[in-house]
Length: 127
Image (tube, rainbow, N blue to C red; front, side, top):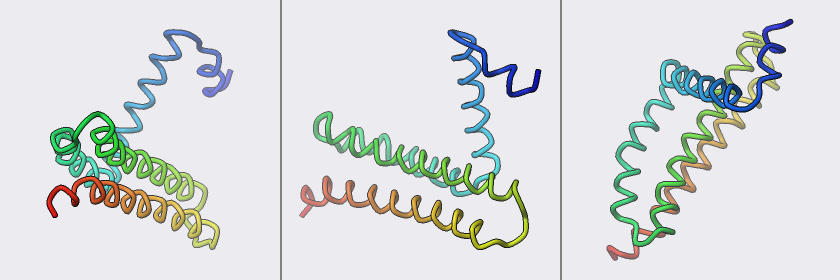
């Protein structure tokens, strides 16, 4: 039985426990190896409580917090793409560059969405 096969057949509570462990490992790996992820976590540690405090009502709070968490999700996906590309080959290839650039663009757009949501919700209150 291969290493992959031994985990594929798990069900129920064992599968959930395994999945939580893999997720913990992924977060730890991103924290250890990805400076951008660490920076965005620090940003989230400031902005999530701020969003909960500044948001009026559940919808605003959910938007202010949700877009910050979305930045973390997209950064994790970008880091995963980069790790796979680096694993496949360390030589320069146009498709590898394209994959990494597209992942980076996804993070940039997510940051722009977060800034727009925060601006659209908060700026009118202070103008």
